Length: 241
Image 1 (cartoon, rainbow, N blue to C red):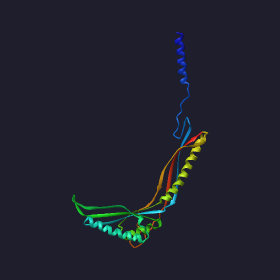
Image 2: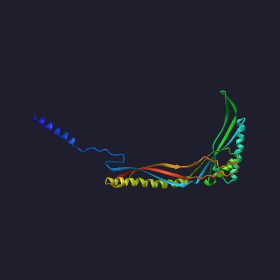
Image 3: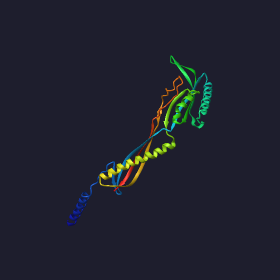
Image 4: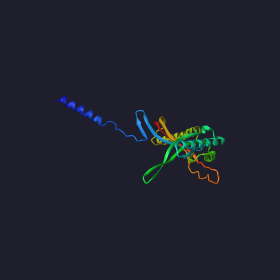
């Protein structure tokens, strides 16, 4: 009996020891504590505005004819005329590239019946130039074979975009660190290092689709592009102690 009473007492003491152990705590999304210390997660955004240094003019040469070959041939003739004019205006050949090409039939629909009425050929181009010359390029292209102006956008060259992105990242990281320091100070800690870091973001081109300025009376097309913004968001997890 004494032996059984002794064993029961030991079991009770073990059970009480488990109940009196340390309580577990839950961490917030912004701060967590583990065996290696506390981590703080922050997000920072940085942006830089700059004037566009690249214009992209999208035009198309369009022709209709009774046969597919005739439509294609007319487009080819007009394309050669347009490219020659652009070349003479100082636009290099490698700045003029094909965006798309298609030849397809056109139909009339009357009383529920479909009647073929010819073929349409479309050769679309992407023309890169300086922003200040965008209006001139539109006028040269339209005056020498281009039938449609599908859009004009003002953006950044790869080199400029990379430089501005680096500045935006620097601003975003600074913003993230400022928040992390404030969070750490609030709970009596100091940031000691970086656990993880990631980034995302891009740039916003300025687009203009209205080319009504190129009036039939011979007025020149002109544009007033706005700034291009490069924005970056960084997510950083810091160590704190």
